Length: 294
Image 1 (tube, rainbow, N blue to C red):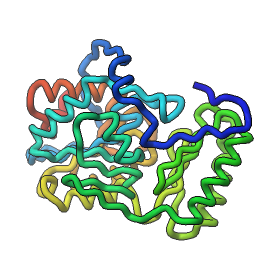
Image 2: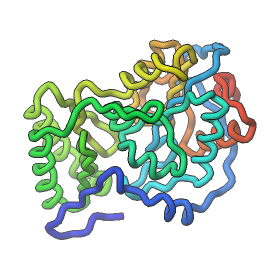
Image 3: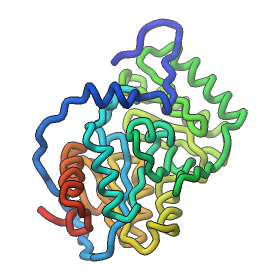
C-alpha cells in the first residue's frame, strides 16, 4: 500500500499497526506442505534431548514481510497453535520482536505470551513488564526530524514505538542510502545510549543496552526457561544477536530464508515454519528432534 502523496508524513504506531479481529476474519488460509529445516553454514546439529525453550521472531518469521508495518496478515490458526505449544512446553515460549508488547497482544489476542519487545528494550515475563528506559527529549527531537523527512519523501514510513523509532523505505527503495544516512547522523547525535539497528528496508534507533540476544539470555536465567535448550527462529539482521546468544548457550538457531547468517539451521519461509508449528501443536509436542527431521 503506497503512502499517499502530500505534506503529511505517514506515521504508524506499533500498537495500532494491525486490527486483529478484522485480520482474522479476512485472512484466507491455504493448505501447506510440511518442510523441515536444513543445516546452514555446514554447522553440526546438536542431538540434545532436553526440553526446549522456544523463542520466535514475528515479522518475516510467523508472517511474511509486508509493504508497511500495518499490512501484515497472520494465519488465524497461529495464536491457538502457539497457546497449545506453550502448554506442551510448560510455558517456555516467548515472542522476541521489534514490535511493542501491545502489538503482539493485539495480533495474538486473546492469548498473552511472554514477550521480548522492541529488540529487547521492553520485556514481559510472567505478566510483569520491564523497560530499559523511557523516551528521552533527544529521541523526541529525532522523531521530529524523521517526520520532516517523511513529509518530503513519498513512500517513507515513520514508526514511533515510544522507546524506539523505525524508518521504513520498502515502498521507496531508491531512498535507502538517504534514509540510512539520516538515521546514522541521528544515532551519532544521540550518543552512546542509542544504537542504529538495520533490517530489511528499515533502520531503527533503539536503546544501546537492548538486543534480542541480551533478552534471550535474560529469559534463559528465569523459570520456566532456565535449564532448557533454547531455540530461536528469526529472519533478519536484527535477529543475529539472538542467534549468537543461542549458539553460545548450545541451542538451536534457525534462520527463515536465505542470506548470510550465524544461525545453524535454515527454514525456507514463514509458510514452512507455520506448517511445522501447526503440526507440532496438533501432535501436542515440540522437541529439538522435530527440527532435525528431513
